[in-house]
Image 1 (tube, one colour):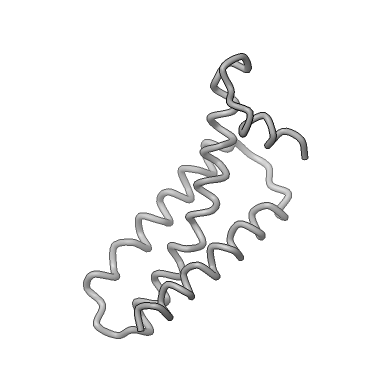
Image 2 (cartoon, rainbow, N blue to C red):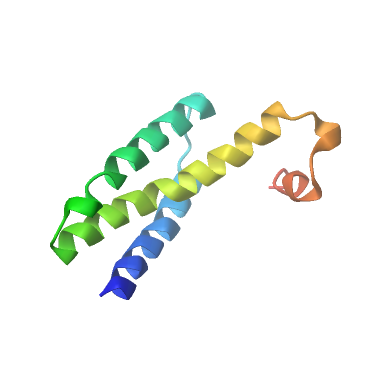
Amino acid sequence: MAALLYVASNCTNLVGGWVYGAWRHGGSPRRHQAAAAVCFTLASLPPPFLDAPLAAGATLALTGLAVPVLLILSCVLTRSSVPRAVLTPGVHLGQLR
């Protein structure tokens, strides 16, 4: 059953990253990151107290939506706050799109 729960979480990771990448958003990346962190935190609280696998899977799926958004925004904020001369090649490649 644990494997199915993680499949659900990982599938929502894919969907969350795709939706956030396709969404033409306005506003500050810091505000988006704060909102995603709050959603992730709130969705992470219930699983230890849930007995039903379906409820645990639903909360894992919700946390899975926030993870790619947090990773994307962490990269964006790091790239914007670090001097260009010290960025690694991996960060520069993110600017090619």
